[in-house]
Length: 234
Image (cartoon, rainbow, N blue to C red):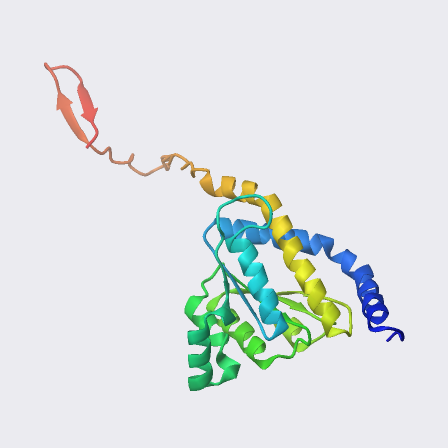
């Protein structure tokens, strides 16, 4: 850790973490595009964290339900800690370790994404939420500090900030939230267009099989004025 004033120390730690963070661009773009297509198709994003990470979670959902820059349709995103009555009831009746897992089981559906934020990657309630998500078919992403860590190990994908300083980790988690929204909004028009395109059904063609009688014609055959039969589809 550098020595000096608190400002110098903090900025030095932040600058050191920015160098490896630049390598996350392709992952951020992939996450943003994936999220755009899922939310456009009617899925939702569930987000959870503790303490400062809970605030980060709520910041992200506010950007998605509201907007980051330009006006667009609202997108379904829920910060699980913000439902205080459910949170405190679950904590009181089942224990704090289940406050997120129980909500994931209630709200999560296949196709949804659960994003878990933790500087340490060791929070028991987030690990329980990841397991609940796996049980109900929800994809899990994690934003953590330095990996490997337990949360990174149990999630489907992880963006780990390479810094031992939890403040720096949280600050780059906020940067991640903004960039995730940037990439999502960049992809959203294509995602909405894909949902709006009507599915064109391919015509069914029946091919005769050698040795088998021809397929039965459906409808009613009507003879008009003694002429040849005309089929009228039923």
